[in-house]
Amino acid sequence: MNAPIKSIFDLQQAALQAMTVAFAQVFEFWARMFEMQMGHLGAPTRERRSHDEIAHGATLTDHYGKREHDIDPEHDV
Image 1 (tube, rainbow, N blue to C red):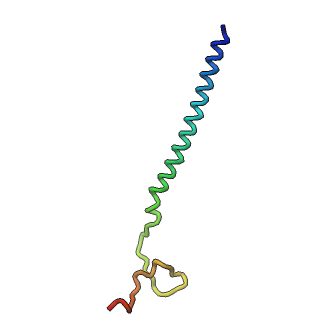
Image 2 (cartoon, rainbow, N blue to C red; image 1 turned 180 degrees about the vertical axis):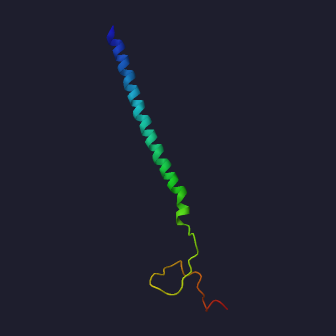
Image 3 (cartoon, rainbow, N blue to C red; image 1 turned 180 degrees about the horizontal axis):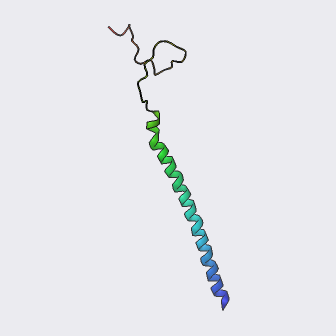
């Protein structure tokens, strides 16, 4: 008489263990997705300049993007 009840309890225990593993995987996926979403939402503010950079002359440290405010005598008439 104990054998059918024991097999039912074993089946329920296996089902609960499977559900626990599935919920853990879903939570890990959700946490990873949330971290990625927060990283994408913060990306535009990381790249934004907080002040205007005006080049003070030709130096070795100047690079493209800093020279946009220079005066161009050929085109400024």
